[in-house]
Length: 120
Length: 97
Image (cartoon, rainbow over all chains, first blue to last red; front, top):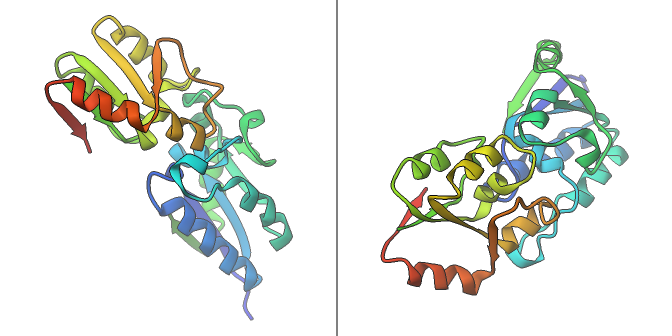
């Protein structure tokens, strides 16, 4: 099978809409097909990675544990926009998993390297 | 009037619209609760408006987003019963969908 470079561009907060969850599902599908997968978190997408989600009282599944499974699928290229973190009062220490914090411009360069961009 | 905001202040202008529209109470639910996290750019907007508005946020949505240790001062955290009480307390309510 041909391997292509897939980047998922996550820009939505979790739970308020279904986008974040759908993105994660497609990430796992792409990884299962042994594609070269990376994920960029921009804008409110950075909130998906915030640690300490306690979702019992809103009746939906929390994301945090599933992020931990990404490594098992060899999805380790996770890029987070520095500007988006800063605007929201967050740092890499607030995130549930290790990521690479990059400027928007550097994320743009990573996007240019892809065969496929999928937006969520 | 009770303003109900369920959109992130970093994604939609709902908070700005509410702040510019009269006075009363503002209740943050769902992604709206990102407004009340300490250190974010929305914090200053809320601080500046605290004389004019009372601010509330739904605890279940704060917890879901991992923000329970970051709630800024001056925010009353309510549960679902408190949500209903607020809607009953104010004469009208406007959901900034």
